[in-house]
Amino acid sequence: MIEIVCIVVVAIVLYAVFNQNGFPVFLFHKIDDQSDTNELEFEAILKHLQEKQFKTVTAREIENGVKIDKKCIMLTFDDGYLNNYQKVFPLIKKYQTKITLFINSDYILENEEVRAADTMHSHYPFLLWSEIQEMQESGLVDIQLHTGKHYFHFVSSEIKEVFTHEENLQDLKNYQELYGREEALEGLPIFRKRGATSQPGFILDLNKLDALKTRISKYSELKLANKALDFLEYGRIETIKEFKKRIVQTVSDNQLAINHYLGYNAKNFAWPWGHFTKNSVEVMGSIGIKGLYTCIKGPNRRKVDLRCIRRDSFRQASLKRFKWKLYLCRNTILGKIYEWVS
Figure 1 (cartoon, helix red, strand yellow):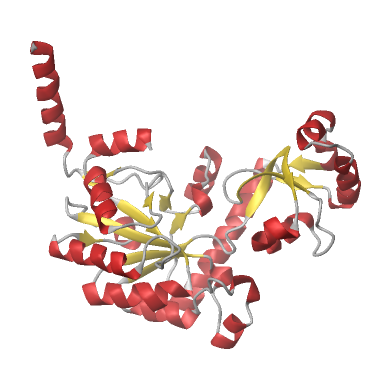
Figure 2 (cartoon, helix red, strand yellow):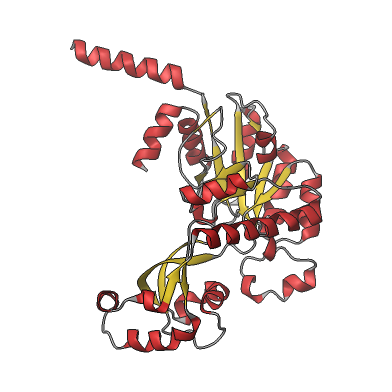
């Protein structure tokens, strides 16, 4: 009995000590019935934050040392979809809520005619620079870095599947760049993938692609091909020097675009797919990136570790679910338990 009482007392003390000392950061992409949450639920979330007097902060404010108190939270959106202007922007203006938008600058377009012709993204079109400028000038939207194209690359010489247009059409441009060709992709190997800024890649010898495709086709199962073939004969692992040079160029292009259209040097970066390694974190630090935003669930301390800012993502979020996650991520003990079990 004494042991149970001691456990309960310790639990109460830990809860009291660590309650409301976390800093919750949430990740969205779009708001609609097929995505993170719908308009009604998102508005309910913003209304709840306003009623409970939460204060939303941005990546630039954190970079500049804003004091994070127990009522601070952060809302982020990745990629840069037109949906953010049409659906999100009116609501954050209504509730005077700040967000940080991490954009893929190569997909942001100049005018409506160009957007209408962008058939690759017709299902979920991207923003125009004029729309981003309007949002940024409102003082409610902070625009930051998410690479140019949100591409992945191969990172090992282990085949996971082979390319088919039916299954891989959404990422066609990405595969065309990896294979160095626009046609005759069917049956080419797809190796293990990660975000292109995460680690050194497996670079295919483009002159040997057709020979590799022929050899793979002779095996009834890919696991047999993986055992029998040495794929390093058909490519090589990128050197650390090459990897660093590529990341620097990618981030620089992203920064230049934002600087050109918005007039400031963005210094906060969200990892595509949340993929990163120790090497990539070091490279980002060496080129002056201040805040690194992940897809790791759980709480941040109010003294934020800028090298690893956790963000809790949503799929079909409701106000009830948001309240629950907000509660967990404001308590660093409960939030850590949530991080471990989820």
